[in-house]
Image (tube, rainbow, N blue to C red; front, side, top):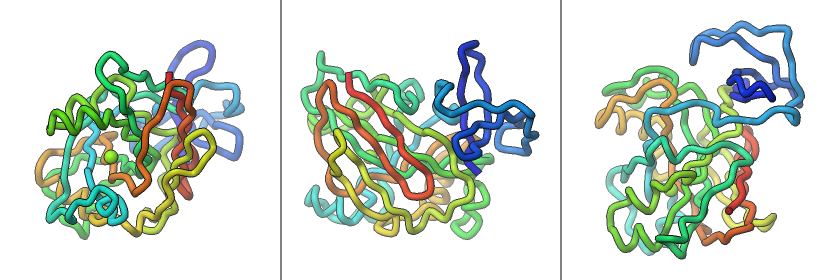
Length: 252
Ligand code: MG
């Protein structure tokens, strides 16, 4: 099932499930059961919002073998974690604001994102997927000059609008073997498969939940494959993930 959060002209936030090009509005106990209503909307007639409202976005650096090679980095022994603030969140079709008062190198990083469905603390690898609600696309926008300069990631990864994700959450998906690609102005720049992950989704959920409690709606962004590169104002950037869909954003 594909879950979507959206608003119509009335600006009232609603949840729905996708039925082809139609959104069926639902009454939803978040991450629990939902009741379909009789109300439907064409997906082209609504504003798509980020599909959930996480308290935190836990990101994993250097988690694809091909990306570790392009960065000339040794494979990490443990997942490398950092956090993007939830004030960085924007949705599908929103504009990423280029922070040119501080940075002159802003990169895309197309990533598979895990959406947590229930509170997870200290969970084992073999039960980790029971805590996952579904999956979406995330673009881990990065001011590469600042992450290099600061050594810490908070500034280079944390600007407002640096965490676009969506457009919806797919719940019926095996995330272990999905094609992932990023297109800049229609040209393919990243192309890989989630089978290339150094630490897979169950390992990440377990590892992170042994560091911090994960809450329903929290996001784990699983890292980016090779092919990272810069964007400029006026560009269009898309993250495509098999079985989920396309996250499209503009640079302004
Ligand atoms: Mg990343």
